[in-house]
Image (cartoon, rainbow, N blue to C red; front, top):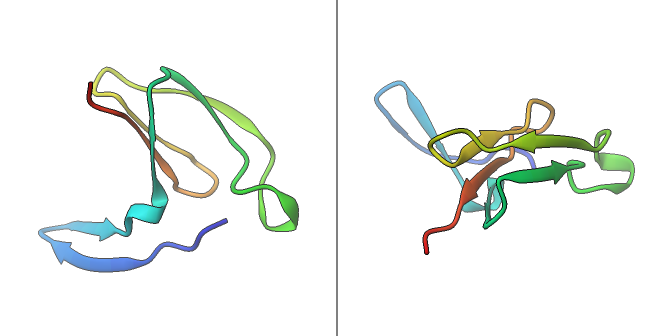
Length: 67
């Protein structure tokens, strides 16, 4: 699991480092928090209409890549 790294605050929103954002071209993704002893149980997530989903365990954000 990659810990959140705050890199600035804009309004009420905290920006995270790009290490927490994973680009994908799939509408369904799997997340295990990086696997190993620091990971979490593997779960499957579906990107929303805006092309994003956040893992409820590790807060990694999956974003549909442009193009």
